[in-house]
Length: 536
Image 1 (cartoon, rainbow, N blue to C red):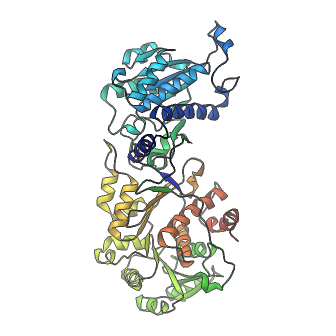
Image 2: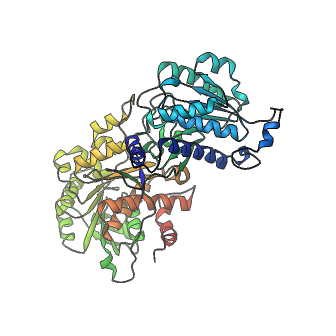
Image 3: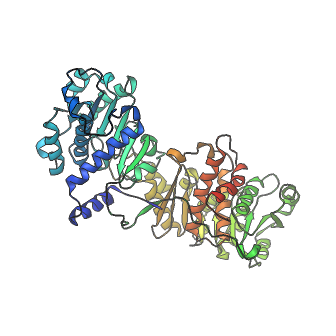
């Protein structure tokens, strides 16, 4: 899995590399600037110089005609992000561009490496001071092909200073309403909190964001609280290798990628697990059937749906490979669970919210078996503190935002409160806090699904950028996800591993099908997705 870093972790990794003597801060800044320019030319090949990469040929300097030169604005801030910007400006100039540079802050107070690059730029070009008059009245934004934001990057911990925000809002709307259509952010769009993706005010959506070494939390979260920011604001994300250590920081956050899968080359059906899905009554079984189909497709050896006796015929008419048994009440469930081969349970999809259903949830929790609790089961947990207290480490909770708010109202309030300074409270923080309180794995659904266990281990299934699958927002898709996780638990996956793998495969199935997806399509994409992973 790919590491996702906080701003503090990134700074610590850079500091450790510099302290080791392997690299200097100045070298890292040069690599970063070169990475940004390379990413710009890769994203927009039409902007690259005709003779190839920098530097430009000597004959270029003999040209007197400045017409036709591509023009860029580079906005530099008072820290090392600004230093990266000066490198970008110099390299664009060497590639034949006409470059205007603006500095926010006092050049004499720049960090040492940033000041060196400021001085290098000043040897070949001018640096204007950041002020309203210059940007509003003298700069013809419409003539520029490119705007590079190297103001604050991951270092921003508060909303923009008043003078910066005033000028920013005078300048940036012109970028989007006139001819400029290429806005590039160095590390992260200015105004976005690196550790949460929250918009601390002032951010604008970029076309391209270039970051270094590893993605940061803001690049993969998609905050629901207004104003939006995070991945939505980053445009295309490119991650540049600047030669830093591969060592994982403490308490690292992971971005889920393709899982490794054990095969089914030997054994019989029950050696690959028996998943048991509880269903609601007549007319309420669709969600459980979706979960059952997902569990079966993902590899559970056997799947049984337990439903009230009156719903047996309805379910039997729509299920073939999935078995059925009558579960009228908690006593009947305990009899069914006498089958020791049942090793994973799913409760909640289409279950109902009555006394019978609360008793079923209590019975499942008392059994101590691995269990996925979704949908109505989460509402029942939120209503009953004694029931919530029965949760144990073999459980997986799968709330969407509304269910999360019912289960953990104070945590949700903290998450949804306006972000005014960084590091702002994030969905990662909220999910970790929820998992610690519940004492089990919590999968907080969304395009930025966050999964955490009670120890603080955390990962993100980011359905953003090229993995964006907005058509997953369809009735029943969450029920299929619950089934995927249950099937993986039946196969012997640990709760955290099952939640991570299920979430990743859920997105992949949606991408495989594409627009027009309905929930019934998701399990049917699994064979092709698993074949692509070389799962026999």
